[in-house]
Length: 304
Image (cartoon, rainbow, N blue to C red; front, top):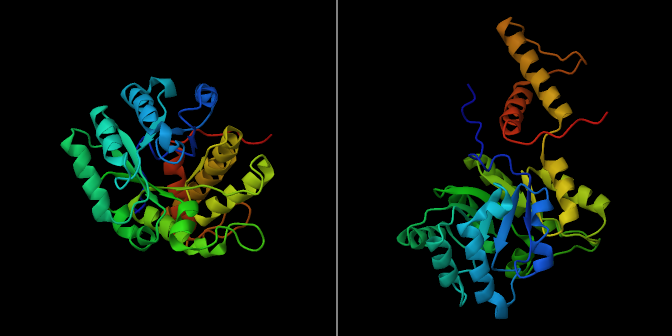
């Protein structure tokens, strides 16, 4: 029953938070073991200036070969785009290092992603893929991109999309331009359709304002995104709270499932909770989906 409820495969289904830390910043990199993120981005693209690309690649390859530094958590290697002077060598190096999961930036089409996969496979690697949707063409073709084999997540990048589409990043109120909501919704729907994680990043007025962080990522969660990404460690506990299930949320889902199934078994046409709330089939389906994801998520304790 309800076989259409699609979820990302393990170990990705439980990812609430992803953090990007500049690989050439030894001080920040040393803090990684203490950061409670579910996944880490080993980045050679945005986090590395041009003069440091080769040095960063050498360091990144060592972590791809031996990811024990991340204590068993998901590591996602991001090369530069193939059109750059470093992209092909990045991909070759990651493939030869046995990369298991890779993010590909500034993607345009599904055919381009398949070309990247063929290049990886020619070097003996076949990693899971986070497709980064941050170009106008990718937004328009996101359903085809999401359907590509081995894609496990879709990252939405409004910053680069702003540049590519010529749309101001912020609106007059200083918040993210609402013009991006349509593209975000396409990302969420494609992820839901094909069982992919959908990852959003918040653009903030004040990086250190954790109240604003909570508001912006809660908006992303309400829009349907499953995961948040950040480069500022204090954000991570907030992301884990917003995108992860609490014990109270799980209790509510279990009550909905049990009440609905008992009523159906008894042949009751109307289903209500003890609170008097009427349950519909979509409430039941949402509870099933929530329980399925919660099975792979770390559950946060409910407030006393």
